[in-house]
Image: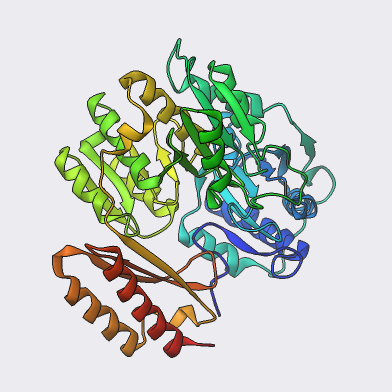
Length: 450
């Protein structure tokens, strides 16, 4: 049976794979496991619950709150706000755990549930496995005064916005910058605009009117066309595109060119090294990051520590080694001085500040790295669990890697959040990368078809 938790919580089509019953059972089991793990330290625990604006979040929030309260946990409903805001507020408000209901960049019909332990940290794999194992077991239900109480605090988010602004330092200003902010009709439709505007930037918000149904719909970091076009038409200096729960950020330069997560990491790594804030002169990135990032960082005396795909694994390396910066090509960027998880708005603010500090355009800053041609093909309709054990697929990967030698690389991995196998090839030319990727994708399709 497949593991319930993926690389970023539990996700599925809301009211089909991810039901109210499942959400309630997950919350009860999480309360029990975290309590037994000592997270509650013998006191009556408090949980913060937030969500993105998708419609299914309304009934899933009700189920999560019911599950926690029935297990004796006091609950504070935070309403609609970004994932990094929940992580920050769990620590800021000294809560014992947090729950974010979101499917991030996924389409509106999907939803998800992710947990944070005390301090606003994502759960380790062993805790997630323990929660999954506990689901459905009989338990002693608290009664009377022992049941959890529920209250709503929709103003707590203001503390998060204040934190974002303060991260740039006392007296910081973005005055003089014109910035297009694509909020993906998601959780940061209010907070991102407030943060940039409070620093004096001229803000042009787009896709900032969530209605519960339009989240990520042709908008945000997975659909960059609108923000690219708007930057050019408005003569803006910078474009920022968030995803549905605002833990990702991609950027656009003044000419409408994409600045992806790898380039963002490179820009911030060089800046932090210059400011003596890049611990051990090390950047943490995943195996999906472009080889050009490693090459560029080497030229600047920065080591790249590679992890498995998923910002949780980036964060694990950062926490274990005290590293200050890490992230993914997709735009998850973690600046550990200010956040325990990827924070798209925080990332965008620091990019804008770097532009003003250097007097350089985003296009100039992005030249810090040269992107090696890369092709990624998502192969659907296959058994992703067999991707690492099929001998013919393994042989095809080995042959492609041998053809490239030291000039590129090949990576084949099952997605942790979607029913696909990702085939990635980097090569000296786009044509070679495309040809090898298509060959491997065809082999995966033929060998692993459902």
